[in-house]
Image 1 (spheres, rainbow, N blue to C red):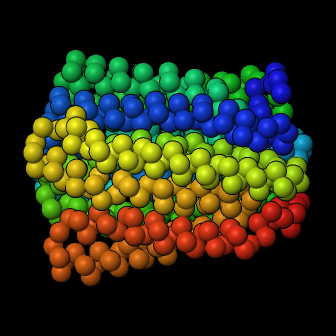
Image 2: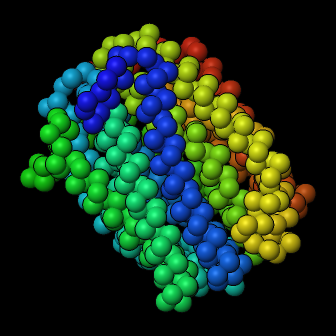
Length: 452
């Protein structure tokens, strides 16, 4: 099928072809994003040092904690937009788009205020090592000064993806990724800035992406065009967005709190553990790329097809997308397992830090298939508007069980391997629950029951 528009209607044509064509630009875009995140760590670790790398690494879970609630709620807008796009209801789609942009403006300001004032206290509660505390605080304050760009970019990109346009977000992400690396080098190597230079490079490139995305949305002739004068709250539409997005937001927030607990346990093993595990997390991010790509594609595909009442097509697409995510992530996991020493050494030359990073890779990497299964099944259910069960699964296993294991096992064994093993264990438990629910629940007709 030839598509002359900037969007893709996933309610027609080859299922595999539509999903792969949509997922591949997402994969490339996510690859560039991960590359520039990795470039941040490489530049900081090699030009400033291990303590600076540890300072940046120590803030990762805190960043996720601060943005996850609002990002989760905004993700509900993607479900709603894809639903009305598939159902060919442009007026309702317009209301959803302009409501989520108004929500972004509000939450962006709130994140800036909260992030710049409260995070130093939270870093102390996390047990951030004293020798990196000042740098971590400086990094996080600059980063959250750009919160508005972060939330606006995620939503504007999500709107385009919800209507099947994954190409333009790719172009904009490539441009901003290159800009971020250039700014990293200029600010750190040229102007001799410390970790705050890396944070400043990130937020400047983020605002550049926002400009490109909004410019595209404001100049397109399609039904999803953004008009500044229409940005405002439609409370009925906001209620629908929150219904689909709040479970994901709460899930992400509570999991983020659990990850703060995990990071606190890593911090207890010292600066080299923070640096080594932080380096591994950058590598692990590459394994998440097929997961992220196909989960976004799955949510869009399922949302559009259920909105258009193409039930059998939605089911077939769900099976294909989850299977692809599992296969690709496991292949990458095997490569990560084998190449872990070389990969970690790219970030740091400190033998102790390398040992910590390799140890985590050798425990987690071969279980990436479980992570893909959990995220893939959750994406299908969220695309169907059934976000509560994924929330319960993630909160039960990735939060309660994970923290409980750490609380009782770490004092007994006093080994960082205990911290590392909580990941595959909880991935497996959530996969079992989600698989059972997916096979037994009537998720195909959930939109019919919530039709306006």
